[in-house]
Amino acid sequence: EVNKVIERAHRDSLDPSSGNSLRQTFENMVIGLLNSARDNRGSSAQRSLSDFNQFKAMVVSGAKGLSINISQVIACVGQQN
Image (cartoon, rainbow, N blue to C red; front, side):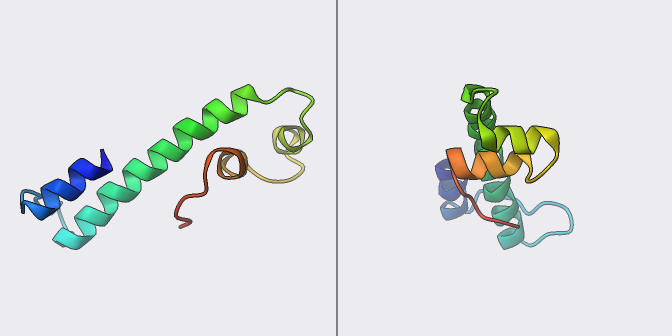
């Protein structure tokens, strides 16, 4: 999907979204796709963890970290914003 957005940008077939420049529109589209991929892979990774996994236990109990941290550590680390 990101490659398709890049190709559209190269062909000048991207239209700027309301209130954004073409560059901002491109960046927002790519970041949205990459964040979605990270979240999907992270959810899969979290489901694969045992309930006895200490990292998962810390996040689920609220003691430390967020579910996005599990996604980043296990699945991928994307652009952090």
